[in-house]
Image 1 (cartoon, rainbow, N blue to C red):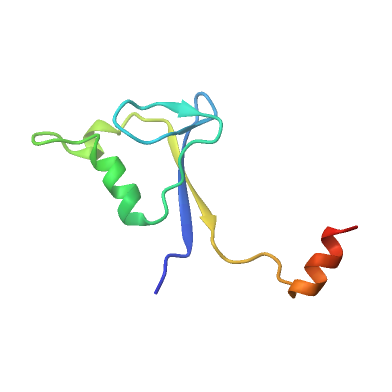
Image 2 (tube, rainbow, N blue to C red; image 1 turned 135 degrees about the horizontal axis):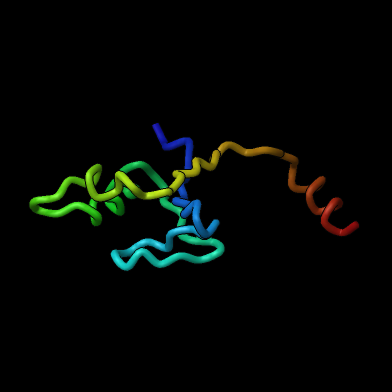
Length: 86
């Protein structure tokens, strides 16, 4: 069964999104994590041998945004081509 969501991490203080990696960089679009495992792997970067992720991020003002992977509209190809040419 495939994931039903994509994920982004928003910094609520700046309104910008995390770009991934260990340097905590932010941008207007940020990075999209395609599944929970990938998001968890990113968050694990904030922990370490003697630090828990939960402890390191307890004061972070971040939001995890869930984006649906379900289609919002469908149409057959001929209809799409007609609509596109209008």
